[in-house]
Image (cartoon, rainbow, N blue to C red):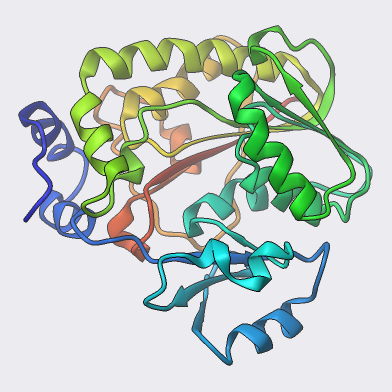
Amino acid sequence: MKLELKKEFIEKYSKLTNFTEYENIINKFLRKAIRINALKTTIAKTKRELSKKYRLVQIPWCKEGFWIETERRDLGNILEHQLGHIYIQEAASMLPPIILNPRKNEIILDAAASPGSKTTQIASMMKNTGLIIANDLIFQRMLPLSHNLQRCGVSNTITTIMDARFIDYKFDKILLDAPCSGTGTIRGLTQNSFYTIQTYSQNKVNNLSKLQKKLILKCYSNLKPKGTLVYSTCSLDPEEDEEVIQFLLNNSDAKLEKIDLKVKSELNLNYNNYSSELKKCIKLWPQFYDTEGFFIAKIKKP
């Protein structure tokens, strides 16, 4: 049985990447990945304990990240997870905090934080110093966010519930992991894959793009001078990725910064005549490393 993709989806994505390779990988289940939480343990200790039961494969862009090879589908029940020593986190989603590069004692906004995978990663990188504002729009999303912050021993984070378009404060760095269509998360015959495919439409993508443009403009305005904004989505649609960054460049003094990571990327700048500046962004297709698909841009304020 294969995923049944909509005709408009096939036609569009055939123009964006090698569709045969793409369709082949999205019909396979996603590899399980974990990130070791340095706030509660060490990489060496937890890797040693886990290696007694599972095979670990290093994720190339994250020293704390590993693919974990096991038949178990319930990793949330293992002791290391319950103790907060590991966080079950998709490999590609570890990239945005690494690119944000949070430092000790900075003031950081995670504009759309729930369920907290990237928030906890940022807190670990900051060694629980400084301040993180972990915001989300929906009250119900606070429960998993708060639970994960507590489980992982995060103590430098305040949670807020509001529309990020109305946050008015100056931050050293901001992560905007924007609400999106989630097309990069289509992997295997799962409930998420079916839902994402069934609800996909160009109209939905266009509406999300409008929201993302408003969010990125507001987040950029909330940066201190010399501040950094990382914009990311788990969508592979240009309207939610390249077009949003092009909009920011056209409507602000924002500058794109080349991402200093050896990660394969494939952007289609001919899709809507985007600026060659966008080559500095990363579009990680799932067939490159057997991950989810992700788009990431690093933006600097003069």
